[in-house]
Length: 210
Ligand SMILES: N[C@@H](CCC(=O)N[C@@H](CS)C(=O)NCC(=O)O)C(=O)O
Image (cartoon, rainbow, N blue to C red; front, side, top):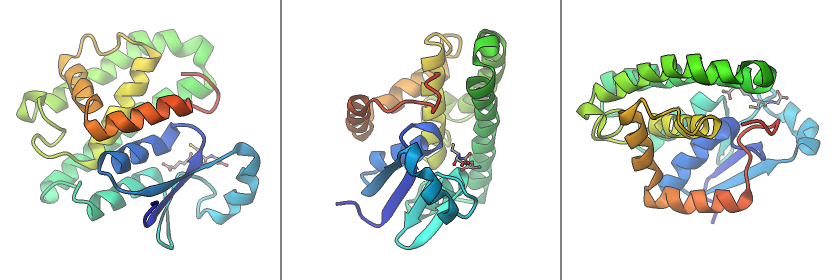
């Protein structure tokens, strides 16, 4: 059963993985439509901004990864309880996007020259900010909002996951983030999905660097 949602993206984790994680963790059925690069020129003109990820909610086309995540959050009670929570989640989400942009720049444009510098200097500086923010609610022992899981937990979990693929030790100096990643990692529905993803050998990025 694939349900009302169809997620279109390439055969990588990239910008769609946070959405795949959210949907799988909540047992929300969807069609995971993975497009091969060779088929992209046909599909590109059908997307509002000529890009993916794209979520079809029945016949409504939604693009922009943040809009997709917020759409699902509003529909599935993953956007906090009030305006204050929602503003905090938006802030946290955009903070992760800033870090992710630096990661993408390094992966796709400067991997050979800049990877070591990114791991040694950029990551500790950036991760310290998230460690502090996470600890500001429930001493970092719950979710981003404290007690209630939200859409941004999937964005943070995915970011921490790919950063540990880049450098297995990058969370060692950040115990709250490390424990958070471990807690998210053992959620039963995520475990099932992660096993399936492992078998599918879904790459993190399109250029084979990670
Ligand atoms: N701001 C957009 C960026 C989307 C984006 O950069 N998509 C890339 C893949 S990660 C894409 O569709 N590339 C193919 C193209 O531009 O032709 C988002 O967050 O969804």
